[in-house]
Length: 339
Ligand code: PHE
Image 1 (cartoon, rainbow, N blue to C red):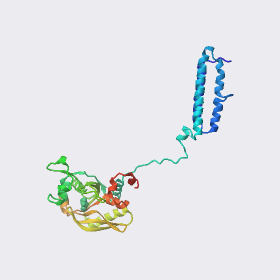
Image 2 (tube, rainbow, N blue to C red):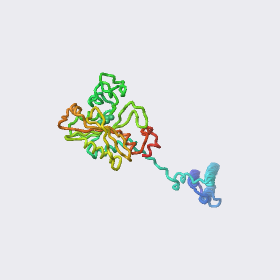
Image 3 (tube, rainbow, N blue to C red):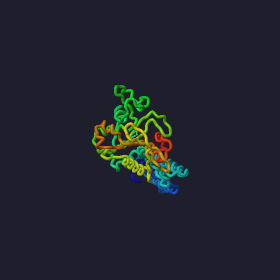
Image 4 (tube, rainbow, N blue to C red):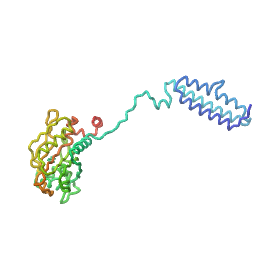
């Protein structure tokens, strides 16, 4: 019998134990299990048996410790074998195989997307951009000049009634601030700072103390369009609106004007669009009032302009067939996922 040191004997046992445990944990069926049983625990030529034979080569004083190590390793390998056997009998595939079962249907990765109103805003900007309208922003907290006065809504005008608007209590000064009630404020802000020719659109939130129902909400979005150049007429207004509506809604959309009144346009119209055989009111429009042009320092004898304001929720509802605009704000993913 060749002499064996206790250290190398232990090392052998540990290697064997690690090999056996790894192999048994990956065994997927009874045939693999049997092959591993023969390799590790086989009574005649198993690897454990081979090590047991070398036990005789240990120094006499090392034999008790060697025997203990041997019994521990044998118990561990037997336990690993029994665990693998139980698992295979129960129909399991083993941890590695269970982690990736290529026969199972995949779990779809849910990708989010922009909100339908954001999508609508971007599409409006893109379509109007192709017509030469630059997209600009304006503040949602406004002063009375931009929300009213510059738009020819003087102090005694009914639209000025503070009960009808959201004033900010933090700014209860001689010049109170309020949440803008229309995006027409941006017309003024742009004209104050630039010279004609001008072609701009501005999309954003506006606030009115409306009771929420299927077609109203205290906060909603508007598209404001403004074009100021020499020689602009209502015909240009109608053409631009019709081109926009046809691009946005698809097909040949008809646009109808009904006489109306806005303090800052003259003449003023309500804009209806025909879509699916139905006329729907989409907003207001008109020729920029010469008094407004003068107030921002333009010469109404040289330039004329048109302006329009459309409801983003309305055109989105039309486009997507939504019949209650409150659905846009409920944040119910079952609704939002449809778009
Ligand atoms: N600002 C108006 C509204 O909110 C709409 C409008 C815009 C009308 C531009 C004429 C020109 O009702």
